[in-house]
Length: 229
Ligand SMILES: [Fe+2]
Ligand SMILES: [Fe+2]
Image (cartoon, rainbow, N blue to C red):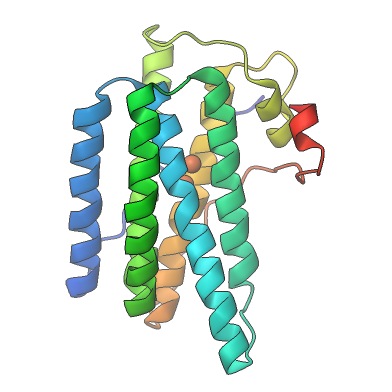
């Protein structure tokens, strides 16, 4: 399988107060995550994917409500954001097959969900542009983290176990795929979210929208998906 190309050099230079707040906030969370997880990339992936799947659904909900109130077209934003939320949930469903969270991490997941959902909902109400910028920066960090995870696998510190069945089905990966192949497609997904969200933030202030990294193909989720996994 040819690895999906990911441009690692992409970074949105913060412009203005909102961008700087978004960037500072994400860097603070990065520091917390680095301190908490250190090199435990499997655990990091599981916990952070539970957070990553929140903004898409919040953005989709609020855009949906706005379009209903204003009786206007969403220009495809709602579907894009719902796809992002689903995609992040599939990252979670994949990594949960690789690494089980500790009891303490389960507690952190529940606590963080309460705080983060309410925070992000409020932020999106006040400034959708800053909210999308936060996600754009989150995703920049996700691309970096998965690049570190790849190095960890390549240098033998994390075992390159066979790819979970659910991942092979979702990304259409060959039967003999490994965790490394999974991390590569997940990283490509994150690069796609990064560009989509920075693009949405730009669009909201009338700034030029830059190119969006292609998203790896995903299977449509079926009602019996669980059985297939
Ligand atoms: Fe993700
Ligand atoms: Fe993501």
